[in-house]
Image 1 (cartoon, rainbow, N blue to C red):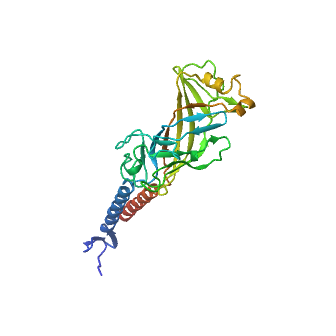
Image 2 (image 1 turned 120 degrees about the horizontal axis):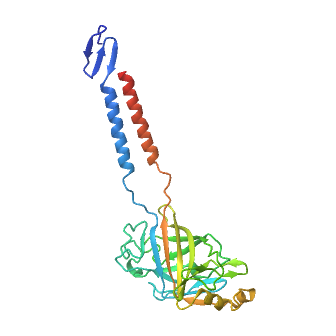
Image 3 (image 1 turned 45 degrees about the vertical axis):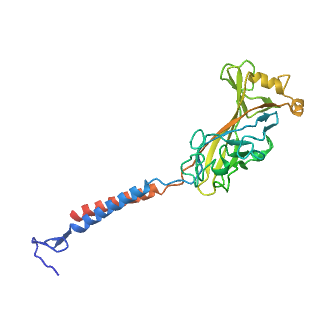
Length: 309
């Protein structure tokens, strides 16, 4: 046991500095401070290492060799003879060329690159190119469709050439607030009023034709990662046909009546779709870990200051 007289300084073998009857431990606070700094640096490093997500993230673009038919009461996608394999039940297909990530670029469990045709990705193996997609269970989408609707979009390769991807429809978004389709200026829009209810289909005048869009939203899962949210639309082009002409084709008087709904007049054209999915980050432990590191570092600094006081 070391002893010293008041005012005498003695340095011990583990770094203690004895000043009279006070002991200052210079080594232990420094060691604690350095250790805290190293731990904090390790935490920060680990927290910010990118982690591959197994969620369905990116853009799904769809096409079809078939058509879409619109009436006052239903939207129907016809069989797609150009998908792989050909429909039925497939009434849409993945748009894009093998070996590319455009216009479809979708990553999910087993497909980290999103490259079409790669093992574990869309269009892989016997399902490429233009992997078949079943839209809305191959039945018409109507006002009576119950939401959320599971399996709104499913793929020919589900469970075979890639994991099972399921787009669930949770919302059919509202159409245009303008129901007057007559005399629209370029790039202006309207939605047809049907017995006091606005159609969700937005008709936009573009040149001498019309682009019709159906805006949708929902969730998507690959059964592995966290569920992602998606939003997107189906688009259809009616060449040399104005929004007013579409209205008159469905409702000849210009006002849609119950008799017009019963008459079930239709308009048919080609269609495509674009659906973007993103994940909502789960509550991260990064802030907690870094916050804990900062607190620990602050305590170590405070202890050192207190010891040296």
